[in-house]
Length: 206
Image (cartoon, rainbow, N blue to C red):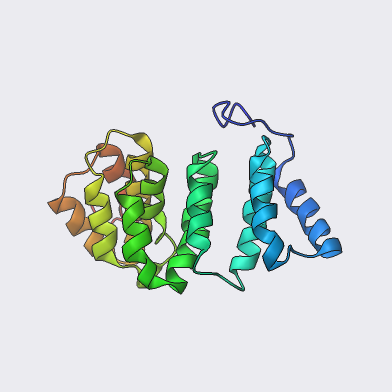
C-alpha cells in the first residue's frame, strides 16, 4: 500500500472493505461524533501517520455532509486538502465534500473556489478544477473551462490529469461543448487525451 502511494504514507495494511466494516461497526456502537466533537475527531485522525485513519476521517465527515454542511466547513476542507496531501484524499475531498459544499453555499464559490484556483498550492488548484466532477447538468461550464484554461500550460501532472478528468466527466453531459473547447483552446496532450476518452469511446469525435 505504501509503495502504491510512492512511500508518502505509512499504512496498517487494512484493505478498504475491512476498514469500512470496522468503522461502520464502531459507529453503530458509539454513534457519530457530536457537532462539538467532530472537528477534534477528524483532526486527531489526520494527525496520525497511518493513511487508513485519514480515510476514516473523511468517511466520518462525508456521513455528516449528507445531512448537514456548515458554511465554516470551507476552513476544514482547505486544511485537509493542504495537509498530508496526495491524490487519494484530495480527489475524494474535491469531488464529494467540496462538491457538496459549493452546492449548498454557491455564493462561496466566488471567494473560496476562486482562492483555490489562484493559489500556489497545486492541490487547491486541483480541487477547484474537480469540485464540479459530479454536477452533470448542474455544471457551470464557464467556470469549469476558465479554470482549465488557467492551468492549461502547467507541466505538472496533477494539473494536467485534473483538467482531462474534469473535461471527460462533463463530456458525458455535453460532449459538443467539450469538443468545441478543445478545438479552440490548447491544453497539454495528456489533458486532451483524457478529456476526449469518453467521447471517442462513443465515436462522437474522430
